[in-house]
Length: 438
Image 1: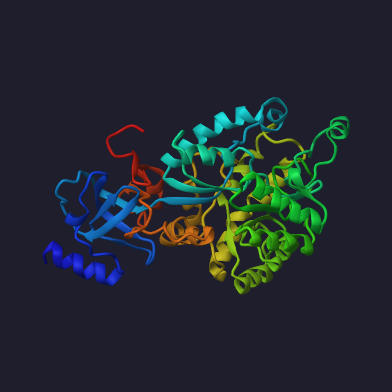
Image 2: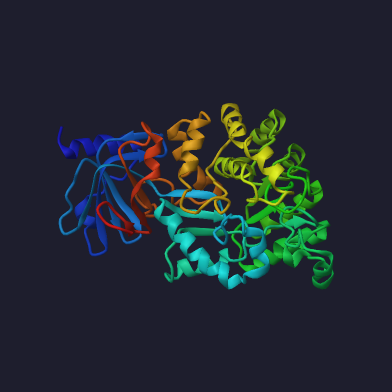
């Protein structure tokens, strides 16, 4: 069968564009010759394909190795091309270490900003062309710097400051001594701390003023905050409802950090877009999430990481260590149960808890939990795009953003392939490719 006939059959079956490559050949064009292609819509790995990039978009996709006159090509034979990956839960302004708690008193925002530049590049080179940064005042500024071409990094949806209750997981004064607390005064909605419906509305509006893209709330206690409880509910339903309703006014989705069952139930009933972590998710909460269409972002990597570090004396403060040991090891089992129950799932790592650039290990942990490799890849591509509410990424198809990642071999046969990314393109710009050093 000729290349032309193969192209026609495959394009018809997959609803891919069969535009003539010759009509797209121009300066700013590149042809990617992929040994295999991951179709995120079906979850299948297809045979050889050529993907024509024009500027920052995919112009055409065809089966086989098709030469495009006047257009340079990149040889990715022996590799599987996938849409660029999305990590829906990162914190690019920080990275866990035994010094993390004391650094908050010693470092300025500028220090964290400089660190974030390196973290962003590591994330991009690991294959993650988009991220949702769920909590950190640096992230909106890093997003803007990346968009302006000043630094290299993934496309960022930035939450800015997370919204919490007094003493909650994202209360920035947790762990301060009484003298310092009295000096600074109690944080309020401007600082992301609320205690009423009116406060909730103001906090969302402040995030809009600050330039956030998404709203993050801490619906329960957390593992790494300097507080005793890691799972107690920390908002009333009417407070979360006020956040969700006000967020809708600005076109925001709401992501809810939640470990405990009751806090999750309240968040889901109030209409949040996603539950993050979900450690103690019950069958009842899973059923509620399915009815409401709520997404689950497991962050198995973070659970595994903190459980391991809890075994090391001095890595975490004494108030944090038992939470890390107890909660961290449960998330992978919850992800397994949620997948079997049919809960909608998307990809996120909580990176910043662990070292940036190690994001792809989440794929490995998901597969260990019983999630098929194809589903895990869909979670980081087409499903992540659904969570973000965008329709121009997550699929290798004409008109989509030219975000493409390639790994050697077939990741559906060996998921560990994702740990060695050979090629990264974002918006049509190549950041790494076989035979070159990033």
